[in-house]
Image (cartoon, rainbow, N blue to C red; front, top):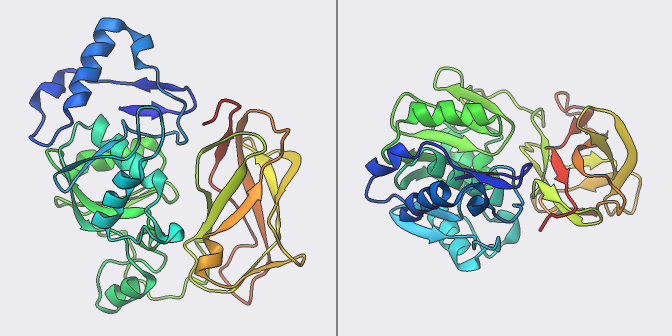
Length: 323
């Protein structure tokens, strides 16, 4: 099941193939499909989610059915701990936990493609581990989303990796890598795709923050809510950031409003990874419903020749009925 947060309802398709699921398929999906047919669209109503792409809140990973979000929309700590343990991420450190956006996308892909259990080849990587893999000539990018706790190399039981590749491409939400074998790479970085001939992971040329991005932790917010966000794909520290982040409409026009990061000076110096992953600012109380992005200006580029002067964050949506 994929929940489209912009519409606020769940959309189920392809009822026929439910009859041919593998051992680890979610039995509740079949029940949901039958109820939808019998009771009509109103039976599919769900709480407005925090993410535009979301599943039913149950992830089947390593043969385990893990409930990580209740039907009422609350995230379950015990379930999230189990998922983080399987991905080898440190749940005790809030800045190193697996991304909720990534978990929701995994769930949505599994539901929509009616796949069996996910088998995990590679999950969270510390920067040290990622650098070690690169030194061994492994497929590990300089600014890998594995280091952001927002990526996995996986196999989806009963579903060909090429089918996963095509479906994720159609979502236009994420990074998807196809290696003409059983496993695939999926992450919740910028929308892009590649195979083993075009991944460029072997490139040793310093990136100098060329691919730096800013991601809000959620897709959907209320006016006046505190927004937590992270710089990702950072290869060099420190970085200097103008603490006033301008709010830009989806069509690129300015709103005249901004978010203010806490900073003692006109240029916020982000010294390292922990600080880059724990930024917070409050959204304006008066911000019309709609989709926006934050314009980030870098005020001290530290001679990083490839680092952009400005970037736009991942889009987010303002909804008055957000959880």
